[in-house]
Length: 263
Image 1 (tube, rainbow, N blue to C red):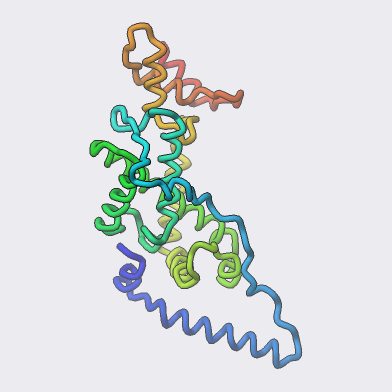
Image 2 (image 1 turned 120 degrees about the vertical axis):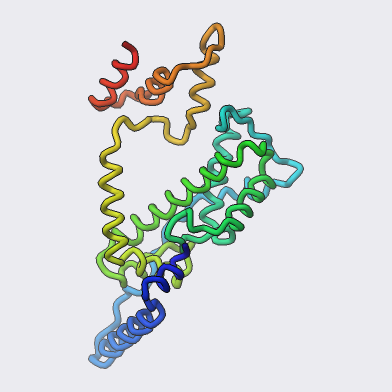
C-alpha cells in the first residue's frame, strides 16, 4: 500500500503533525531573531552528487533498440555491455519519480498499472522477449528496494534529528515526500520491523561474489568451457559464484560448503 494509505489505516494525521512542527520551527526562528542572535545555516541543504541517470539509454530511439538475449530467464548477451546497460537502465528508471516514487510500504504495494507502465517503457528502449518479463520486473523490484535502502541509510539513519535529515535530504526527492518517508521510518512498528529484517539478513551464509553479474552468464561460461557443452551442476555454479577472483579470503563456512560440493 502507499504510505498515505498506511497513515490513514493507522490513524496517523501526517499533515497536522507537520503543521505543528512548522509552527515550532517558526517560533525557534523568531526567538533567535528577537534575542539579537544570528540564525545558523542549518537550513541550508547540502548538495551532493546524484546517481547516474543513464541519459543516453533513456534517449534511445525505438528503432535503435538493442536486443537482449536470455537464457533460463536471465539476460546473457549478446554482450556483457548490453546486459550491464539493461541493469543500469532498470536502476535509473526506479529513481525517476516520473515512473515511481518511494512512497509505498513495499514493492508489492506499488500499483500494477505503474509496474506495467515500467515494463512497457523498458520495451521502448530494449528488444525484450515476453518471457523476460518476470526477470525484468524482479530487476525493477530489486533496484527500487536498493534505492529506498540507500536513501534511508544516507539521509535518515545518519542523522539524529528531523532538522538534520531535512537539511541533508536527497536532492532528487521533493521535500514533502521526504518528510513522509521520515515520519514513516520513525514509527516504532517500522523501526521494529527494520531491526528484525537486519537480523534475518545477518543470518544468511555463503553470499555470492558476483556483484551485478547474473548467474545465467556464469552458467553459460561454465557450459561453454566444457567440450560437450554440458550444463553445469548446481555445485559447479555455487563454487564459481563464491570463489574470489581478486584474492579476498573466503569465509570458513563458504569454504566448507565448496569442499562438500566437490566431494
